[in-house]
Structures are given as structure tokens and as C-alpha cells.
Length: 112
Length: 114
Image (cartoon, rainbow over all chains, first blue to last red; front, side, top):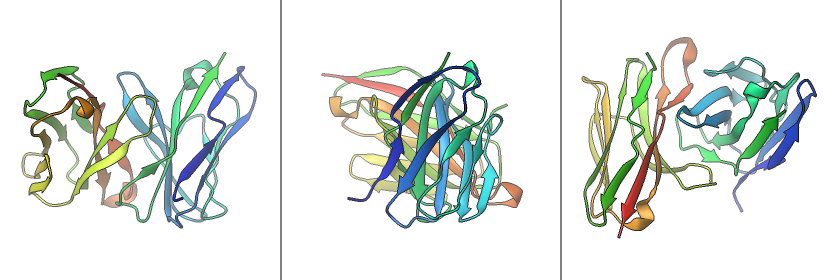
């Protein structure tokens, strides 16, 4: 089944404790991206990647890191999480940079 | 000013009504236009995709783009309770250093009541 998977789905952590949210797609898509969704603010792009080893900042990259060493994986790293990073996070992939985005199920992160 | 503005609603309509959802944008480099639907506790799913000015129809849904006015719309005819969801416009930047960057509107919460 073609899909985007994210893990974990739910995470509660404390300020400053490094964490990684994994994202993987099995559709051989070149484009992958991360979003956060907050009430009243909609979806905001954090980082995107148009191919392996190519990443670019979205609208809200501060406090996040990404890497794209393999085509299928695009992990999101929070080196020192803070409470303002409490949010619902979505990973997405698409065949090309302006194509249909396929979204993962979301990761609900709470930073205490 | 946000690059993409969308009226967050909420919007409540009776079953069978015509629904109009709208977004405006400010960046002329925006060239690809999409509408996504998001049900509660789910990721967004693509409804409509277009890249040129004019209308595109798919069943009960019509997407309209006016590049000269930087305005996009989604119309839903004969709305159904199953259409109750959050609708998000999304626009891809096709120029300059932000090529490939995707910007979403804030989303409009729609409720269709029987």
C-alpha cells in the first residue's frame, strides 16, 4: 500500500530533551516536507526537500533540523525542544515539487 | 501580511447549499494552486489541483483561479454532511530562491447540517 508513515504518533517530552520524528514514504517520491499545524494558523511548512541531500527552509524552520540521506526517509529533529514546539506535525511527500502532497497520519507532540 | 489569506470561518450551511471558499495571495511567483480537505484527526487530502487561470470542475467541486487578482476559490455544489471538514488552499512558489516552497491558507472549517 502506497503510504507515508510517521513515528511516533504521539509524544510527550520535556524541554531540552532531543527527539527525532521519523518519516518514510514508499512511493519513490522526490519531494518531501514537514509541516506543523496549530489552531488558527493552519499548516505551516517547516522544511522541504526536493531530492536526496537537498533541503530548504520553509516558513518556520527555527528550532528544527532535517536530513535527507535516502530518498524514502526525511526525519525531523528537535535538538532542544521548547514548549512553543508543542503542535501537530505532518510529513508529506509528492512525486515532484509542485505535485499532489500525500500526507502522513500526523504526530502530536507535547513539550512540557 | 501573510502570503496566503483564507477566511477561517467557521462556515455552517444546510445540506444542498452551494459553498464558496476563498483565498487571496500576494506573491506573483505562486503558480500552482491546490485545495485540500482535512477531516478531524486526519492528514489533508488533495481535492483539486490547477495551475492556470480559469475554472476546473470535478463532480460537485469547481476550482477557480484568477491570477490577475491573485484570488482562488473552491465551490461545492449540492453540499452534503460528509463535506463537513476543514478546507485548505495551498499554493506552490515556482520562482526564485523559494522554488518549491508550499504555503497553506489558515483553513476554513465547514459544517453541512442535514
